[in-house]
Image (tube, rainbow, N blue to C red; front, side, top):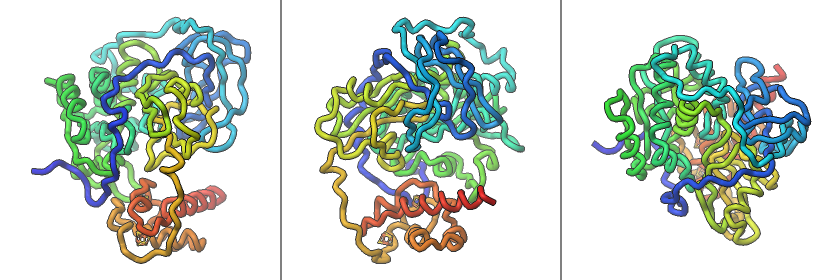
Length: 438
Ligand code: SF4
Ligand code: SF4
């Protein structure tokens, strides 16, 4: 039998060789961190500190507000220098807590290390997920504890996403190789919280060292490490569920409806680390890569470190950059300034050269059907894009535009270089805005 996968999809060059075998390097403490209160999907956290307060690493500095929210913790020790709007990856200014570091990295008192899973009830584990400030670290930044309160039904599997199908990124790959024990501890905790008898980790087959490390760490546990076909978007939630379980999440539905909860491997490792060390989510591994950066690396950085410090630590740019992307090239947003912080959901920084991003001429659609053949959601991207361009939003909705997961496969294969994803995204935003207005 061949490797498990899903139907359709594409095969872009992986471009992972720049960093795939580079061990994770810990970046020195930044002199300052900028911590946006809204680093997750849901309501921004509310500050618990004031300007001038001394804070310690791991100290809670903002409290979750409402059901879909998580607290925020100081990622370095020092003094609160400001609570004010700062540039955010969303493109506008957003409230943030700025900490000037004291270089001491003093840990907050009272952090509870070595929590034993046997002594924790499911509800306690869910509460700890929230206390750890845990969000989806694959980019979605959805509060993790919320996934563990599914409306109804039994959870059969907790499925970890170790596919890392986005070109260039290798942060999850190195995490699985170097932090396999934390991944497995976090997964066991998730399984207990969900009452799930089985854990599965899906990993693309081009990471044999990660598969071996996870298998060793999971020996004797009800956990399967599943090699998957190398194909984009293999790590997309519904594609991963289909590949691993052959279950199909209905359009507009949630994984819990088919008895599955999905988390990223980095989220599991962050929780495993929290259980062992008592330190909440204050750092993460990112991949800094691309032809435009002098020394590509996998870096362990404190949340809130500014991109300019990260780039400088990697030797700076090789030339004036053509494009800077937060995350991978298929789904990551382009950013236009370097005073943005690394956030909980930031998986990488990709710097492309001008030659790489020279804009090809957009040509008319030739009705070749390649975009539809690539779409894993069986949508008709050319029609959706046409409807979007001509403001025919009811038609776009009728043909399932809201089911688009913005994977970018359609734009990638289009021989006419049509901005399909961009048009679809614009239309989705307009539809969402109209729905909000009521
Ligand atoms: S229509 Fe959406 S889901 Fe389908 S290929 Fe394009 S971006 Fe991906
Ligand atoms: S791939 Fe491009 S040219 Fe071909 S049908 Fe789709 S939009 Fe048209």
